[in-house]
Figure 1: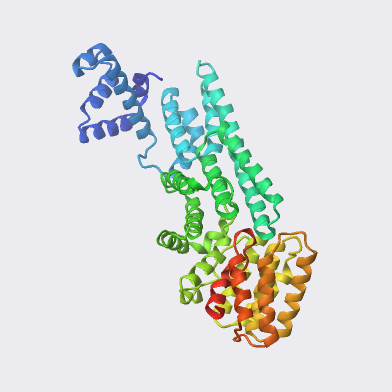
Figure 2: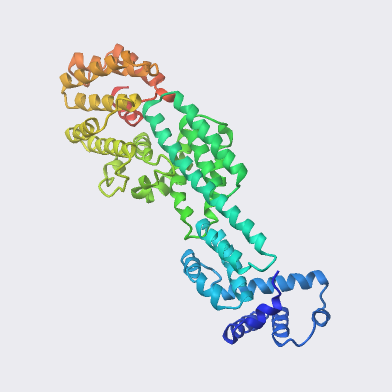
Amino acid sequence: MIKLKKVINHLDDNTYKDIVDQFSKTKAENFLFLLQSYRKNAITDNDIMKKLELTNNSFYVLKSRLYEKIQTNLSAEIDITKEDVLNQFHQLPEISFSTSREVATAILLKLEKDLLTFDLHNELVILYSILKRLNLYSDKYFHYSQLYNKQIAYTLSIEKSLDLLGEFNRKLNEYMFSKVPGLINELLFLHKEIEDYFLLNSDRQIEVIKYFIELQLIIFCDQLNNNNTEEILNKANALLSNLPESSQLKKWLLPLNYLYFEYYVSKRQSSQAEIYYLKTEKDYKTLLLANPICISSRYLLSKTNYLIEKGRIGELKKMDVDSILFDPHDPFSIIRLNLYKSLLMFFNNNAKGAVAEIADILNNNSLRDFVHINVEVKLTLAYYYLHLEEFDLADHILKNLSRKLKLSDSLDYKNVNDLIKFFNYIISNADLNVKNQKQKDTFALFIARNKGEIEVVSFLVQDMLNKFS
């Protein structure tokens, strides 16, 4: 450690007076005595130890803590914000080449701690580069060279981990839209990659990324060990909650609240699901911008289903759509948003407007490779046509869908065939309200089979149950 006496002797008079005043106000008598003794070069260390009745070890601790307090004072803030840290970071040239080496190093080492607190790894690379230069003729040069190299590796591994999370979310969206089984293996491979990165670098940000990947594999794909899902959620929450308010990772709390909501809904834990529904709903207009972090746009359909199941359709009717922010280059978010808009129109008794939104999806997006969402969109459109008593149009949609499913190598959608058969009964009767036994049995079979990875139109099921069961 740099000699404390040199740092104290290089303090300017105003800074020294501020520190003395702080210790006087807080009655930190030992700190004050050591500070003044070193400033005046009045007595030796042995005399100070005798005066304060300290052992060698406790004297070393006292000097270390005094050095930390001086660092804090030199950095000007105790409860420092990210902006304060960056402001001081931009003063590095002035600090490094306009103050004594001892004072400059004290400030830079305090700044190092602050940069680590806020996960500012790119800035740390520059800081360690400067510390290397300042210690060119010192035995610390090799130490800071190692820190610099290590920080370069950290920065690259964090960037790569963020890329892996982005790739994972793209693949997960593709899986949710297509349900192609092979994509699961690709998702598990990406999970293995992030695990390997975390073993090499147990950085907080990489740990959070790993948790987001694991949670989505469990909640949306029924993979990994789902017995510790709540533990993973709470670990991620603890890591994010303990960060300073201005940390960029704080923005990850919103998508994490959404994953809490999805988890508790899947476990049918209503009271917990409601807590996280309200937390997510508070900021849902910006949630879709978290698409690099998780498949956040799925929330729109999940909350629709949640409110309908709870009999709270009135809340759904009041939802504001136009102010939702989204990534205009993310087709998955756009399709879900259009589907959400159509559902709001439908439940606001505007079936024609709902049909127009579905037409937008079909006209502006190629769903050829996404069998599952194609099935859901066309079943939804057929359902709207039934309510408009446009039975010919509904029949055309259903026949086209049946033909494509027969030619497809996708999953065995027995539930979809049940629902098509049920809709065909309605079409043959040209009446949405006719309920004979065959219709009831077919609908009951659809409900029984509509689960797991082949589950479709969950956002319409409760409405169907209300009308047909």
